[in-house]
Length: 325
Image (cartoon, rainbow, N blue to C red; front, side, top):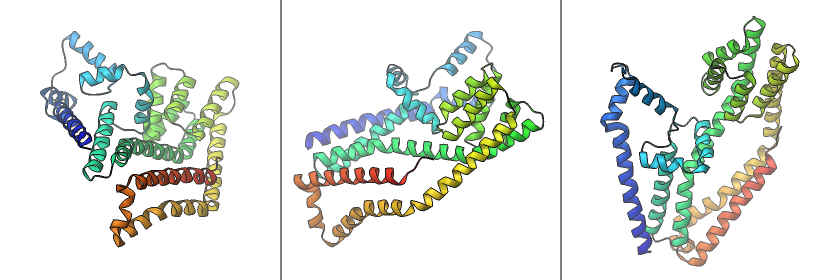
């Protein structure tokens, strides 16, 4: 246990020093302040062509971390594309390096707290794993919430596009109107698609890029219908109105399913919270009795097994009450 505490303190010091260096480089360094002044328009334009090419090169690079050595290290890892894409889909401004650093700090902090309280090695290990997964869970929740909001905004956006087409505007103009009128997430996403079309990318390719950035079944319907219409022809305004009507009918059906499955979802919530609440009650009534689960090796094994079974039960009940429409 002393070795684990020493390792935790050592890692905490390293992460603290790295965090301090990152804060200095991000907020207090002369380069950062000069960049902020330039963005505010307070500095003169660059006159040297070499500096201009350097600026353009920086804008094209993937910014995984503000620390040069960490940025170079992350570029060598081939499996970070999924994490970077998830952060972009969640509209998170946190670089990949900062996200990994935050996960490491939370993992070490949770494991160190469990070790200091002498809960045992297995509990400390589990606490570290939970702390490491908390930022990922937060990003996944933010991503799912953003996708849900996108689907909620999509029918109104399609209606606006259909009205623009009936008024004689082009398809890109209708998308530009959606990008200007609607807030995040659908507004910025449609604006980005319009910019890609303006830069010369074909409309089907730009729409497929939008489909990759936003995971939505309703959006797939829209993109597929648009691609087919551009190949076979037809009244695009009527097609878009039909898709908007179909999406609203899906929402209505999903509401009915949610109402019919409310009892099952409530049962899952009660069954998951009941052991936790009873454990808290027993801790208040008889602390020495319940603390055996955390101090005794057999109790720790039982606690981990019960937690795994609870998570498995929640997953099964979630599958039973969630329906794909």
